[in-house]
Image 1: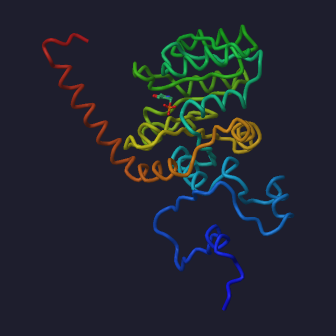
Image 2 (image 1 turned 135 degrees about the horizontal axis):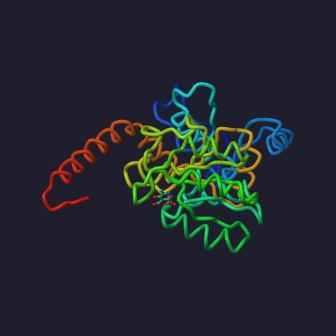
Image 3 (image 1 turned 90 degrees about the horizontal axis):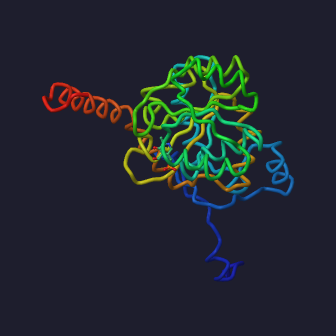
Length: 292
Ligand SMILES: Cc1ncc(COP(=O)(O)O)c(C=O)c1O
């Protein structure tokens, strides 16, 4: 029988998946766009009336599944917290999208001088020239934090990193979140170094968590990406997602898949990293040539 399609059309046509049972491992949805059953379905998804996918910059099943998993880890055993997350192309783009989504020109960020260097540069070279000023103080000095928030009503966010890269300096997240609540400002913490296995900032009342998933979450050095997790899912959908979509700071399904693979051993790796670090610390502590 003569085919209804020409050879050229048969070459480009996707055939239906020959799947009978569910795959054991998350599939990589390497697709820019998604088929729609009707124009109405397309309009409904575009306008948010119906759940679904249209274009991978807006959302993609592989990316969303992995973001959900990280949100679950960040809220694991924290009753009442239903966090949601978005994957980004890098840790840097997660931080930038957070700032562009939550702040406007004239707002200020209260932060620390010992952030990861790239974050400091981003604040100084991108945010500051565009009217969002970073104020660098010692966030471990809680009286100073309180004073700064009292004196400057333009401060709209406390942004911390704990432990910080590379100094390992730590912050009192609970005290910072309480001060932020007292003054009605948002808190965001870079949780890259501890990962949710060792520290869950939502348990201390923090609003947003960012990660360079490039580090412990992926854990194998074969992917570069970031994630932003929010306690308030509505805030994430209304303030962050539109900026991600328009700035094109979204992640991609390949990196999402690699993160997912890495996450399976997160707990094992963090236990081993911690044990190794303790071994080194104890060795150095008793070493005659080490004073501090
Ligand atoms: C603590 C911390 N935050 C953010 C970043 C930036 O992440 P990325 O390199 O994935 O953009 C890094 C990178 O080293 C980091 O160490």
